[in-house]
Length: 199
Ligand SMILES: CC(C)(COP(=O)(O)OP(=O)(O)OC[C@H]1O[C@@H](n2cnc3c(N)ncnc32)[C@H](O)[C@@H]1OP(=O)(O)O)[C@@H](O)C(=O)NCCC(=O)NCCS
Image (cartoon, rainbow, N blue to C red; front, side, top):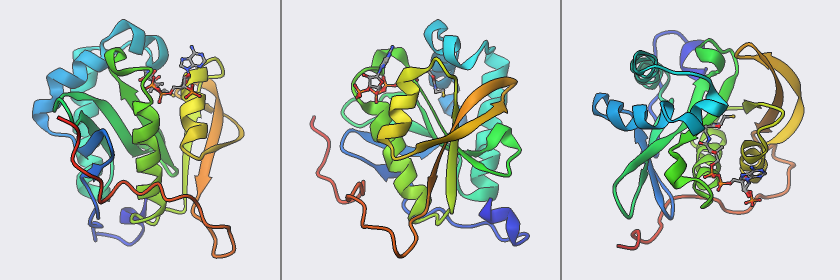
């Protein structure tokens, strides 16, 4: 919520797009609606995120673009570099679109599951959030039975810190904090300066 703390000044978003070994994360565009709808309206995705209509996806896309414009961060489009396909979203938002905390989230098309891509995207977002964006804390909420997402969060460096009600349900609460100067150095997860994606 850094952009709103000091009034009208909108922060720039350094280092977006974020490029990882297999992925490119960039701000969502209006023409992502069809690809994003394929993700959000897929039954296997709705099993975890609840029922969505195409109108819900239109609203979600609009809200994410508003967050990007006002805060300099949002859920970003996740593109598979080798194919150029937009396979979902991953990024940051004020939790439940209200805040005050900043929430990590991700939604990938089931075709892309099981290859470590959500972990790759989430790790890059956390590095970006606690690094260039200089956010102090990123949280995430996940259902008690969503073991795959819990694994993604753990591998992205978040730890379980409690429980909380969110999105109308009791959830596990995870968090990652910006390092203090006394913390030991972390492994370099930096997504920059990587070789081109395999063709
Ligand atoms: C959650 C989600 C992003 C995971 O995507 P993914 O690309 O398959 O995730 P990854 O491959 O990076 O890692 C998944 C991890 O969960 C594990 N996993 C997958 N399915 C699992 C299951 N049913 N039970 C236990 N663990 C499971 C995998 O083994 C892997 O852990 P490992 O590396 O230790 O083996 C994807 O399922 C998704 O988009 N779901 C719909 C939207 C959603 O749920 N968003 C999050 C809401 S909190």
